[in-house]
Length: 145
Image 1 (tube, helix red, strand yellow):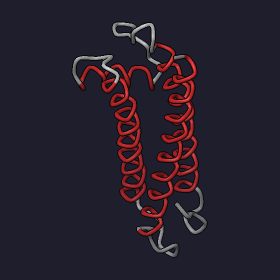
Image 2 (cartoon, rainbow, N blue to C red):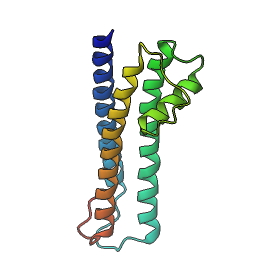
Image 3 (cartoon, rainbow, N blue to C red):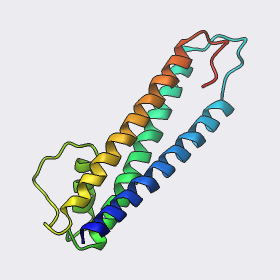
Image 4 (spheres, rainbow, N blue to C red):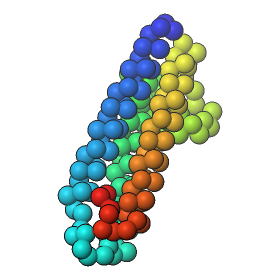
């Protein structure tokens, strides 16, 4: 059973990383498509839109990733309903770890993989947003968002 949790946990991390990076690449493509003319200064409203839009998309990406873990927990019968499974997954992915809900002893190692994956994915999102802000607030003629 331990080997199955390692294989499933690692596969889930890898699948979520591929999904996450793919979605960020699509976000970059979309932001570049709406890039203003470099000869015109960026307005405060445009910068606000770029950042807010990127954050909203990233939140949706993280929710989708947590939902994928929640489906696994629910499929294994760890929770009686999907909302409870999603709640546990969100708390685990963010490494908040309230401890009010836990997996059964036979599956509890699986949640550690979600926490590791969450750290990787939130770090990736943070790096992405920092780079986006750097490009937005740099000289607008050099920005590539």
